Image 1 (cartoon, helix red, strand yellow):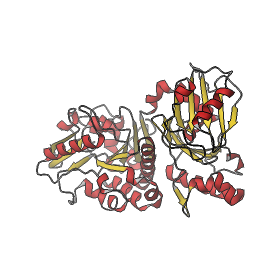
Image 2 (spheres, one colour):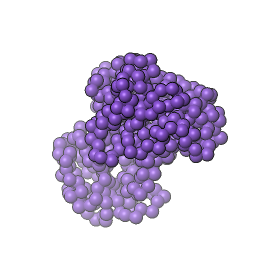
Image 3 (cartoon, one colour):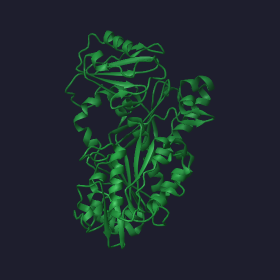
Image 4 (cartoon, helix red, strand yellow):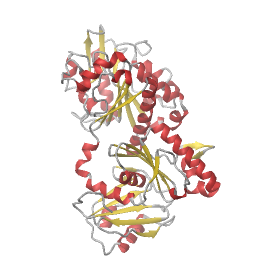
Length: 484
């Protein structure tokens, strides 16, 4: 298998499945496999792999695991294998350094050809992952509700195939592909897994994957390690026709970040913004069953990027903008809503109070920054974002997480997260629409670096993604609309 790369180490790639354990080392041409099934434990898998690869030389190991993986370790026992995988020391048992990733994510990584790719694996269950510009995100869609109290996996996994037969199963697979592609807006869809070969035809934007790509993904886990941070940084620009399409794209990103964060850490922390365009996102998330049903609200914690110095029921309150018709309408515990107490008489005390709240919620040591999974931002006509306004002292604040300051442009006090906090997020998503934003957008993205005049230029994530969702009216002043 030729990836066009020079691997500096010998890598053994293991694909753990519900019916077989398969292995391949780079430099080898033969995939070796052994049957698995409901009696297969992690220890048995290791012994079987050692036996069937005894004549191979390898320095490190990649494992594609059929379940959620957090910080490189399984966190849930596999549905179709025996218990004993969670907490198992694979590195000690194999005698080599080991990297573990969700099995669908490993095949997705091996199938990646750039852009935004949705991978669906039709095997014993349903594997799912997104790869965006080289960054892989396991989705774990299999057990989400689909219809008639059945999950996606119940319908398009092996159980569904056996229950409803090949003809109906093919129709259900087509519906699922269309539904997920519509929600997640990939550039293309790759269908892998052992049952992908049973499909008679595919949608125009889909192609069959090669199961051998799982091994390639395992090789890439090690080959790309030196450039992994680069895959997480940089800016993406997506230009659509209307504000409504911005909202749809933003909903898909919100969902992806939520599923990824909960899968990796058990919690999704998002900071919201005020403004009319983000308000459209909030209304869609609350009203559209696609999002309302599938987003893990009980694991979602909501914060704000900035707030006015007003009570929560004031018409200018960013909290009220998000709460009315959104937070009040989704099944999110009240304890998960962390608002700025703008009703405090002193704006500085409100900022200090919110900084303490961040420290408590993120369990921060002195000098640490919170790392939000997603921050939603807008762009003002003057280039401000959050409440970082041109020419204000808040722009250069580095000692505090949250500050208050008087903003002469709006004749009022504002409370805002500081730039270092914003830039520490895993993902920052700007939503910008309208011709009235065109000048500020062009200056921010393509003008001279003048953050004191155009504060949004300060937003450059240190270890995360930066996404600009733009409509054509706002993007009309850009000379290179597709440039990151």
